[in-house]
Amino acid sequence: MNPAINYAITNDSVKTVIFSMSGGYINQKRSITGGFMDIHYVDEKPEESKDIIFKESMRKTLKLLIDAQKNIIFTTSIPRLNFNPQSCVNSRPLQLTNKALKSPCAVSRAAFDEDQREYRDIAFSVLKEFPQVKVFDAAAELCDREYCYAMKNSKMLYRDNVHLSQQGSEYIAQKLVKAINLE
Image (cartoon, rainbow, N blue to C red; front, top):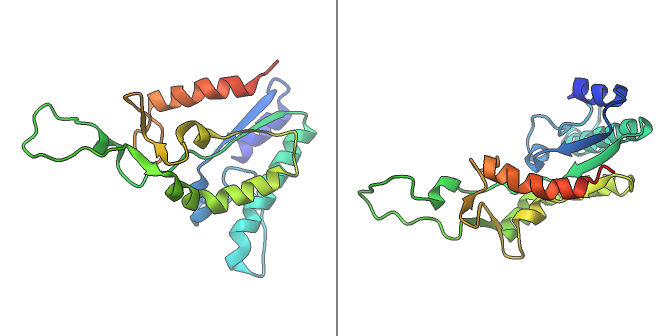
């Protein structure tokens, strides 16, 4: 990520930077900077270091971009599904079993909230320090109070449990374009 971020910082033709990342990175050992600038941070409490590294990387990156007079849009993580979205559609023209399709084609909002709590708490605590950063809540476009949907209006929005399909990407992109407002 560092070369891409450095390019955005040093290239005057780059006016707006959109960050999009999986909230799952904060829960994993790999890529704990979540796509922000890598920092070499030594902490005496290793069990706390992933949170500290994520926060400091996010702060450093946002500060560098703001100092370079870039517009920044932080896009929150989409929900991770706890099922294969293909289980919601009949993909075979002929079936030998009566396997029921998943309905609703969704993960509970409570499961999403629990899964993303740590990531969102950390990210939003840092974002409070940078009021000039716009936030686009991608999850809000896929969730209501009860569910986060993998399928809307008969369109499959996910290609697997963590990635949007082309239709899902187009659906979110239409919402994101409205939030960008580059004028």
